Image (cartoon, rainbow, N blue to C red; front, side):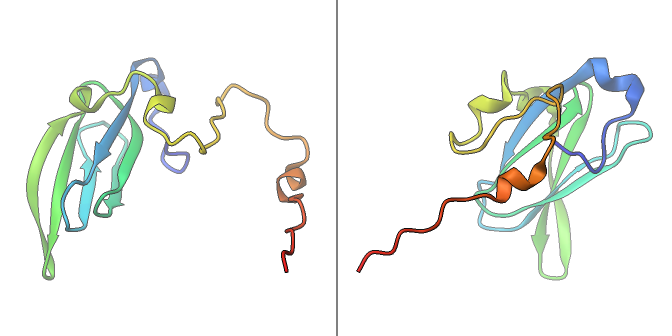
Length: 120
């Protein structure tokens, strides 16, 4: 979910996890504008699955990119995009880490990858 633009603190008990897939061949912009003191906007490329947090009463505006402009092509209630569990929509190779978990004490351990094997 979006670490850069967290939802306002007074809404944290109303958060839902949502998923939107751009099933078109055009670039789209997903925008949420009806949450007070919060603005969410993301580019969604063709075939991309956007997973985000919102509140159930919010709506996602989908703007489809055209030549030098965009058209509001859909407005979807976030509750219709809600997923039961974030991990059910993510590929199995994506690591899931709860926000309540303690952060890594030494982030450099992520960089300790095994040496590649050379096959001749």
